[in-house]
Image (tube, rainbow, N blue to C red; front, side, top):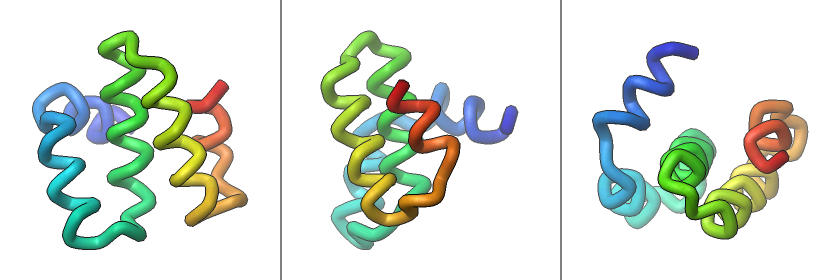
Length: 68
């Protein structure tokens, strides 16, 4: 779990955008981008990204927790 937070702190939202442009089904990119937006206080964008992650993996507990 620590690795995910390190990634979020050092990889910008633009990099997650690029990853999703290449593969729009990257669950982890949506979740990481949601966390990045949340850390920046952009909660609406964070929730929208969690929703996309949930569409890809509806049983992901982390996606629901991040959205909460």
